[in-house]
Length: 312
Ligand SMILES: C=Cc1c(C(=O)O)[nH]c(=O)[nH]c1=O
Image 1 (cartoon, rainbow, N blue to C red):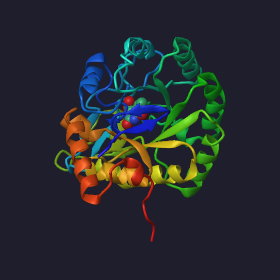
Image 2 (cartoon, rainbow, N blue to C red; image 1 turned 45 degrees about the horizontal axis):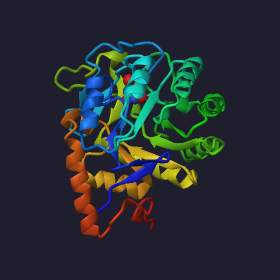
Image 3 (cartoon, protein in one colour; image 1 turned 180 degrees about the horizontal axis):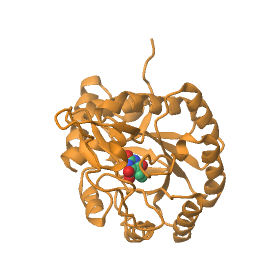
């Protein structure tokens, strides 16, 4: 079977890669991704300056086994680190490189995009509108006017095909409004759904305490528990963004959830919590599981079932 796919005009040997933020903050992390069986890789969202991030504990898998909670606080090496990585990347390799940018202001996003555009590299830029864990910074993805204003500035600046990372939406009207904005920008060629489900709270029964330190224990939820919200966001935007693509992320623990993401419309699928907990060998495991599922169901390529979820 053929697990290859295309995103933003680039060919991925298989549809799997890391969720931004996991296994991608340092060159050592990114090297593990390059050496893994992933089809691509994306860097940790970059801010203009280096950031330490929030105090630990700031990430934990949930005792239920159903997911994770994080309030990392956008720790990253600063955008120039990732620009340098992108300048030195081996673009003759089979794996395309995606760069995530999450400026703390539109001005910072402009400065970072200008630097990447000036470098004129084959990597794909993705603007993160959905970091839920920077105290005092509301998610742009939940402010439709601000999101449109940002895109009015950034899309013409980036010129080349680019993507945006979105928070989960929970209201059909929000899918409609957001999609109407994205459809105004021809070079906005894909959306990545979903970022973590913002501001959950994990409490330990024995200690009666929040599990993580930042923000009184409030943090983004990931893992199996967000699968159905992720599938809904993937399918909602797949239906509403003709000619654009959706990268699915949320709830992937096996080939089965990857299959569901593709049925919902995903062109590629990212792994976060399960990659964090299992390590980069997860890509070989899940590619094999998806292959076995496709053989069992008689599918030879992803195109044969992408977006083909049936309704009753
Ligand atoms: C970029 C910051 C993000 C973070 C973070 O660094 O806290 N966590 C997430 O779950 N999603 C994000 O987008």
